Image (tube, rainbow, N blue to C red):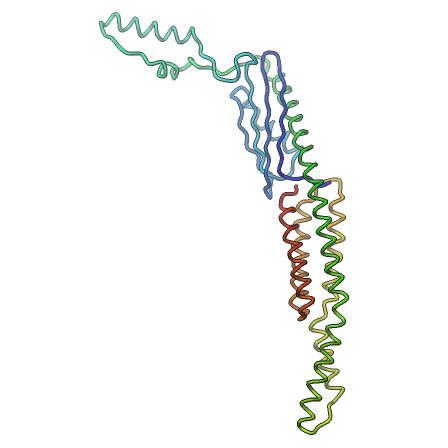
Length: 292
């Protein structure tokens, strides 16, 4: 099954009074790149979190947000009133003894060490287990969305393969006619030129030139390889694991064979079909670049 590299996943859970919320957003990337935004209480779990992600995803830029906080107070840092009151009492006492006055700003007081503190949890191992579980749920949600998009992309890619096969068939039927038409044109030109000089045309010379032209314009090998690449492309779309890298390689090979056909054929009808194949390949390339 094909999977898109673009998706969104979400899951929520709780552990005691702690509320856990996980969001995952992914976009395409040739490699796997994991970026995290974590609440302080789970910041130390970053290596574990990235390991869990790598078990489920292979390519793409992955942005993970994990918020953990008290279910009643949220995950914002909490003001430690006793610590704040102690700071104020000490400053007030110093000012009173020295006979000075000072204007206290709340913003400055909040920056003092220990005034603001993030939620804490005594059993970090149990919290890690819960966070990991919620993360896996979010990854499952993400992969469901990616699979739905991948299914739609697979249908579009299959349609593209069918289009290319139809244009290839047109080229296959047209190729023998190109040689026949070239031979007739060459014979007419030779006879006309020799008649003006009073000489008879040489069938052997004409045949030799036709054979040389036929060899230069022979595209049978390219057409065979093009068909083989299309077969491999379709087979890759039915594998159990998404084959984005392989499909990307096959797209390049399809384009290379098509380009060679266009340069060797030397025929307007074939050139028209080659342009149509290239158009279909480019549309497929855009889809493949977003497949895991």
